[in-house]
Image (cartoon, rainbow, N blue to C red; front, top):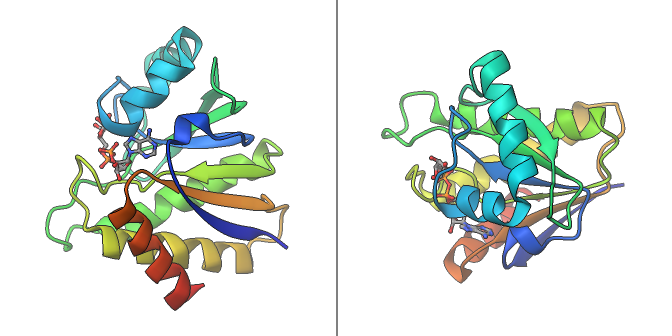
Amino acid sequence: MYKIELIQGDITKAEVDAIVNAANEKLIGGGGVDGAIRRAGGDEVIKECDEIRKKQGGCPTGTAVITTGGNLPAKYVIHTVGPVWQGGNKDEDKLLASCYKESLKLAVENDINSIAFPSISTGVYGYPTDLAAATAIQTIRNWTAYYSQKIPENIQFILFDITTYKCYENALTTFG
Ligand code: AR6
């Protein structure tokens, strides 16, 4: 049986098989958690992102790709692209749910046993954190209930600030 764990901290320090990056569609380094992961992961992560962009044009919103972890403690980085919040009527909820599902699918395909997510879309992309947290927790609960293949045993959320942490804590209490 898997468990969901909430941690306040820096995802680049996580000692897990894979960390998830809140990337952009071009897989070209940005700020926020993406910038931090690229800085800590180094050239190898950046090179593999460049190769994916050359091969398939990038990573559309709601999908995910996987690279090495480079210099990170994590073996892999799963890059997913969350939706930009546009008021809630542009399928933001479905697209955010898809980020979690596609990331977990890649985890299963790569025998990943422990995975850490940041709070996707709630920084630069402006998604209200309480709504994003509810979607994140509900999606993982539903997905793991219906997905028969091997689920990572340890699913972490690594939240940078206390306000974000509290939103995920509320969501886990409500939907966990
Ligand atoms: N560890 C954990 N969480 C972090 C870290 C860290 N080291 N640094 C920031 N956060 P954001 P988005 C939190 O803006 O909204 C990039 O430029 C942050 O406090 O990183 O999905 C990409 O290239 C917030 O709670 O991601 C895209 O263009 C959360 O991570 C765009 O930003 C997500 O904030 C993606 O925007």
